[in-house]
Amino acid sequence: MKTQQKYMTLKNGIKMPMVGFGTYLIKDKDAQSLVHQAIRSGYRHVDTAEGYSNENGVGSGIKTAIEEMGISREEIFVTTKLFPGNETWGQPFKTYESTIESLHTSLARLQLDYVDLYLIHAPFAKTQRLEQWKAFVELQQQGKVRSIGVSNFNQSHIDEIKEAGLPLPHVNQIELHPWSQKPDLVAYLQNNNIAITAYSSLVPLSSWRNVPGQSSAKTEQMKTDGDRPDSPFKVMAKKYGVTEAQVLLRWGIQKGYAVLPKSASAERIRQNIDLFGFEIDEEDMAAIAKLDKGDGVAWSSGDPTKEG
Ligand SMILES: NC(=O)c1ccc[n+]([C@@H]2O[C@H](COP(=O)([O-])OP(=O)(O)OC[C@H]3O[C@@H](n4cnc5c(N)ncnc54)[C@H](OP(=O)(O)O)[C@@H]3O)[C@@H](O)[C@H]2O)c1
Image 1: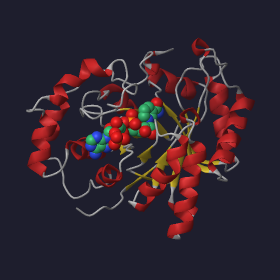
Image 2 (image 1 turned 60 degrees about the vertical axis):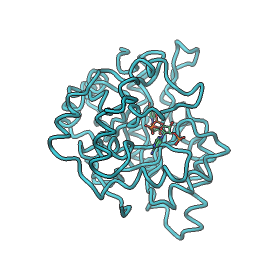
Image 3 (image 1 turned 30 degrees about the vertical axis):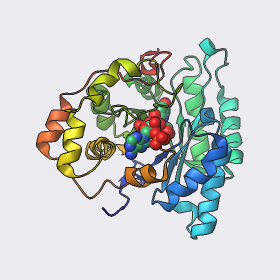
């Protein structure tokens, strides 16, 4: 199949590539070569975060690719995230000022003048959420970030922004896959013209974070179905002549979500962006719609979308 990229347009007119390279659990020392590999394989969107401790390596990978491939900075859509603080983990909430500082520290690590998208990683900072958001609005006005958004926010967190009379996020990045479809939140985001990025699309695979120590506490309970020989994704993969990973990622694309597959393998990196040569038919999309199991597996210490 031929790899090509598709874009979605955010409400400020900025185009975001629908397939991004996820970098959670990629170590700083490995990030340069893997990000370089991803860009060589056709990715034009890279997702990192202050909390992943790999912004240095990610930035070096982007720089290497730009220099080696002769592409411009503008062709690559870079997302990073503010770690908002979490008092239950002993980390003070970021304030307006420390939010601005955090972005500058991320830019220095990434060796960039601006990022394309800055996200509040989770709604943890109950008493500072709006201050953090006001700092985001300021950073966008300064041109340090092209678009602003949130991650793991539910409707009430976004309503809080709305009620304060502040601009709404361009994007909400949330866990979405056939086992966690969040129909109410998705409808709310679509009604408010907030673009959706799906993370952890590959949860139903038996290979999802199967390295010891990487799986989430909730993963094991959900996983048994994916391993069955008659797993619907195995059957569909055979029908379309693709892999199960491609079925899961293509499902996200057909739902209108950007997806962020992470892999440390060159072959899977190439495979995970090769999504535009087949289409899941209506019958299979309807069958997948029935597989929803609820909340998902992320943030095993508690679903941040359930926090106040
Ligand atoms: N905002 C948030 O709170 C949040 C939370 C989680 C994730 N994210 C973002 O979303 C990205 C993706 O989510 P994720 O890292 O949780 O999981 P993911 O991309 O859904 O899955 C990654 C796992 O699947 C394996 N895998 C990848 N491609 C495969 C393929 N083609 N066939 C079989 N197995 C494959 C990987 O192993 P190998 O590496 O060995 O290939 C890894 O164990 C993250 O990297 C991060 O950028 C954001």
